[in-house]
Length: 401
Ligand SMILES: Cc1cc2nc3c(=O)[nH]c(=O)nc-3n(C[C@H](O)[C@H](O)[C@H](O)COP(=O)(O)OP(=O)(O)OC[C@H]3O[C@@H](n4cnc5c(N)ncnc54)[C@H](O)[C@@H]3O)c2cc1C
Image (cartoon, rainbow, N blue to C red; front, side, top):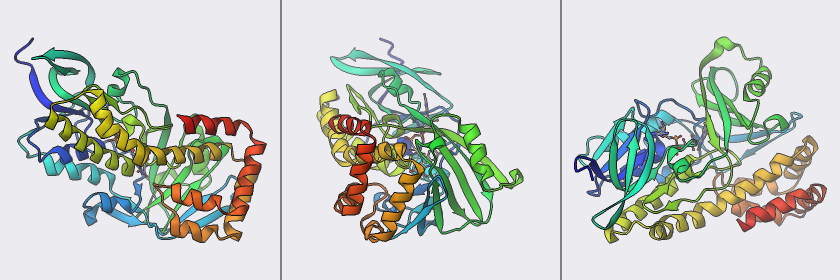
């Protein structure tokens, strides 16, 4: 074996929010950590609508300058233009996403046990044995290095996941930031068959700037042009444009010998909204605990990682992500009149106040149980399932996965 090969305890691939936050959580250990990031700067390219629930400030110490705005109302617009407005306890943050990515990087960059290699791409890995211990030999675009643990935080197109033969299904997303005059207190979601896998959005960044975007599985350019035309947007108003991918589906396998996946690489994204930040922050906390336990016991097997990372992740966020996915299965099949009927039920029953009190952008289980107790909503759902019998098979498949 090459004795000059750089050796680390942990190699994190991806220096965005998942990688930086995990690195921060591990920074106070004496583990020798390398973060390999293919871009030259943290936070760029910027690819986010930046709408995150209030849970953010419970999960991390959130500096005020990261919060650009807060919204009081979520307006949900159906294909015909019919809409409902929901407001309640949840007043999501609109965040400075570049700032959030840099927050944790800035906290760890001076630490002696941490190295960031920018402009370096993870290519592949193989397992090797040294002193009767299984290690990971990592090949990047610039070098080879050894680590006891490899962590894939490398986003929707994760090369770490690919090397483990896991492939995400991704949606295409696009967004512009513009100066405009919409409502600064309101985030709007536009549903339409053409972009049925997610929605079009208007998110008020504050100071008269809005993030207008969309995600779907095909024809994103054509659909987005059509969407922007709805608002008579003058292209001169556009400040900048972003594009990216959003994983779509159920959470992947998370645990492998010496390796674990966190964030978009593991599809820890809500299929209802495409939001991943809250879920990955929770997952990163479990990942950090698991990594510390692995080093404490000098055990890095899939079994150990499953026990300390995958299992708690599945029971805390995995189940909720499944509920998001079930909601998405229904929304995908909704026709315009289904949206209209649902809006009418919400407006004329107690549901609106239930959503205000029990609604949770990230953990929908409680509100779903509440809604199912409402006879009007329950009847609407049963009729919808009878009209779309295939949905029943899909639900069973998801529940048994
Ligand atoms: C347009 C858009 C809008 C969104 N809006 C919201 C929102 O409003 N709220 C919300 O919660 N979420 C939103 N999301 C989702 C959210 O941005 C992601 O869930 C989150 O960024 C995932 O973080 P991550 O660290 O797992 O992956 P990423 O942020 O994708 O970071 C992956 C990092 O890995 C690096 N990398 C990739 N491959 C390699 C490699 N081979 N070698 C080295 N480095 C590599 C990349 O350069 C990148 O820095 C949005 C996503 C998009 C695209």
